[in-house]
Length: 173
Image (cartoon, rainbow, N blue to C red):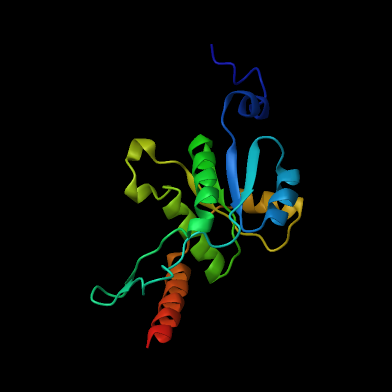
């Protein structure tokens, strides 16, 4: 028999389902937001950017539309592996990075590095990924953001990538 009409969803969610993973940029935000959301959520920090252009080469293929090559720096690999494991265990992943081009790029890099980009995964294994933004760290602002998720704004990601490419190419001249 279906027990969902006997027990509140929140009890079922916390006891029998995996948690929703929320990833923010800073550990301070993670701690505060985690206190608002409770046990049905796991809130972790990306500690900012998790991928970058390689340090010892240009990392930009000028012959192919200036396509960038991103790498996870060695000092961030263990942290990214932890985020990958958390994402694999989560029922869904919510990217809650800042609402600027850097934050949008961080969200996109997280989706890519954690294997969350549903376009690159088999449909049956695609994990729900949401993007939320908020302008203050209050319980009501977080709840409002969770009620109105969106997708990653690829125009902001493209703007940030163009900036990184420009800075990198300027330094190799």
